[in-house]
Image (cartoon, rainbow, N blue to C red; front, side):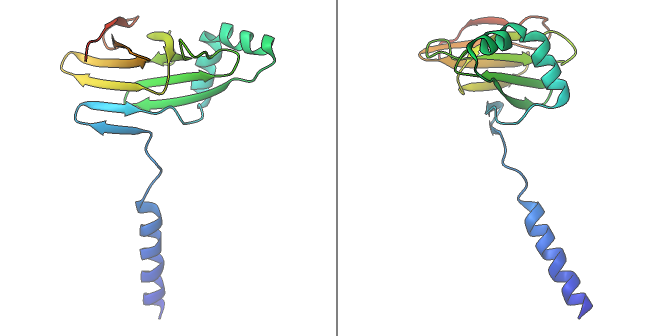
Length: 152
């Protein structure tokens, strides 16, 4: 009897833990389609407050809260600042991309949820789509992202 109960409990535990949490990225070959959905860790919150002071100040001045959403993929951390006071329909919501949370963000700009990381031979590239404009930014081996228009 004990053996059957133990086997049943083991099967249930395997079934419950096997599914795991929902992924926030969808890998397609060397491309990863990223969604910012996680709440920030203490270190991510500290980096966001340090480098996003002006964004928090604008939201506070308007009396609106800021929601931080985070995506992580390997050594890349992306923090999206979401608030009615700082997002707009043209430039989207502010986005900061870090390769190291103790250093400055490699990229600071705006993005909707159309974020993609390309892992290429020469490094990691951030691909952003804002309306019809597509931009690619090299993230590895640089202190500030090098961006250029991308024709797909």
